[in-house]
Image 1 (cartoon, rainbow, N blue to C red):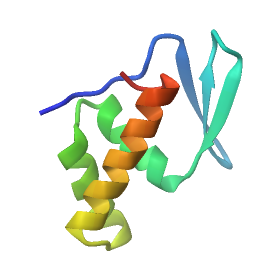
Image 2 (cartoon, rainbow, N blue to C red):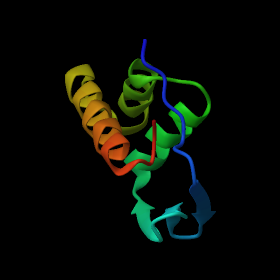
Image 3 (cartoon, helix red, strand yellow):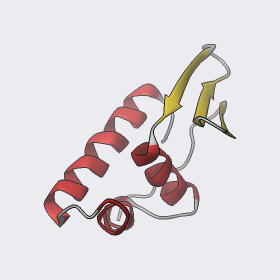
Length: 85
């Protein structure tokens, strides 16, 4: 099972409008939508892809294949950006 964690120099803050993720070294920030927040919460607490997919299924009422694909795509993009490692 692959595990993920926030990348080095990445900060994450909850706001009234969703999560904001900051790459302190690059000075780049992103706004995280509810799907990204749920996946990031999962991996920050030691969960992996399968647990993130399970939580997406429960939260949004989507099928397993869609949930896994969404979580995998999101984690891949976050890895490419250096947000998770």
